[in-house]
Length: 281
Image 1 (spheres, rainbow, N blue to C red):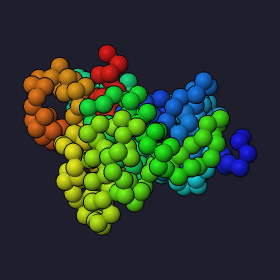
Image 2: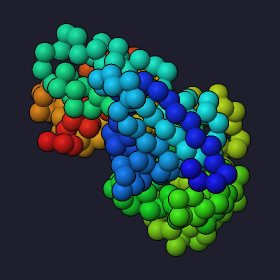
Image 3: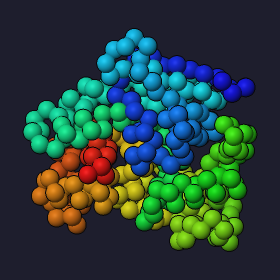
Image 4: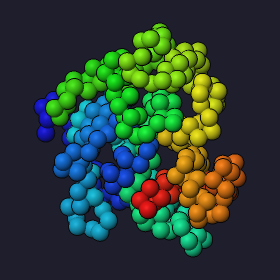
């Protein structure tokens, strides 16, 4: 164990696969290590997360080890370890004879992380019309330049995500070397608006932040507010909804209404299963 850090072991966890959780588009600050573990930053906490078959030998169960900073409760909450994902996936599969059972089985290790609201807002503003490697690069450059230094962890200097107080004081030229493009203006204006609002006002007004459309709003609601009925529709999900449910790929409103009715309070989890499945085809 790295000196100065804690280790927590969460035993007998099911429906937990780090690669599916950290590489399915819901977060951007985690990277896979050679041993199959994942190292990343959540807020101002650092961790390496690894899952191995449970010491009990029970099928489908893993022991999840978290080594880093932050409390045991922080990581239990962040990794969303308490809800029964087996029960939730079972609900989604019932009454669905075609694609959903296949998608649930393919992505059965997915859990929806409980990310910080501000972090998800900033991340998904950057994600607009962007690919995942570039999103990760922009976030790391932004954090390195304006975030809180967190020290060296597993051979690299790490930084927290910049707070809105810091970003609201910047101008576009301050962000030019990060190559955010038009998103730099959105980030500065959003940070300024954020500081003038209560938490309740922010959560009620996600769509009103600069540059945020329906897809990004749904991502922020699902991944930053843990609103499990949100159903983000990107090009992958639109492609699947066309192929398996017959929707025109441009009919985002129709897809959203269908998902809300069909999947209800678990629409966000359904979206993640479907997203993971279609990317693997």
